Length: 155
Image 1 (cartoon, rainbow, N blue to C red):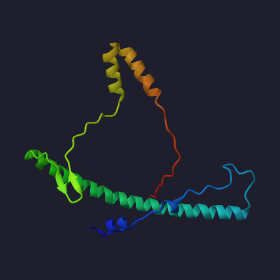
Image 2: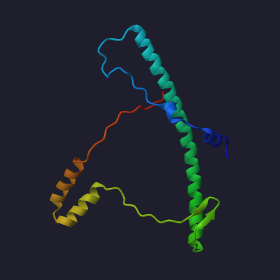
Image 3: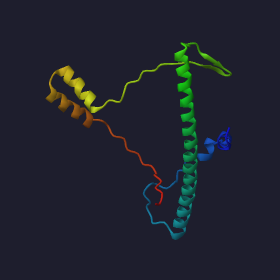
Image 4: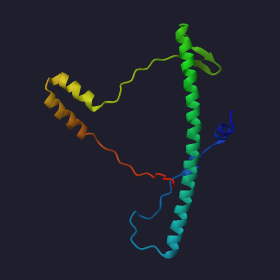
């Protein structure tokens, strides 16, 4: 096990440690903050930013490690499945804490404009109306908006 993975194993984050702080101040200040309050606010934001950057760096590091592990796992999975199929092995493979079972899952692909349109043409036998209906459906899709921070590194 690599040194970085051992560090991840030791990482324990307490939910209590990262509770969201809610100021007793409303979103829109009613009075202009004093210079001392501005300094306190800036210091508080600076602390949050430093912690946020540290978390962002750790997440990127862990994601890189996770990506490598997933790639290795995928190769081993392909090797195992290939051998199981080649030798017609369908029984579960017993391991120390349970078993490994070969499963087959079927999922639907994403619903795209051309799929919707061709299905409607097939159903109503009118390409013009099918196109209008497809556009209507796509325009009615709800949009979701959220605010977030994005880190942009200097070039």
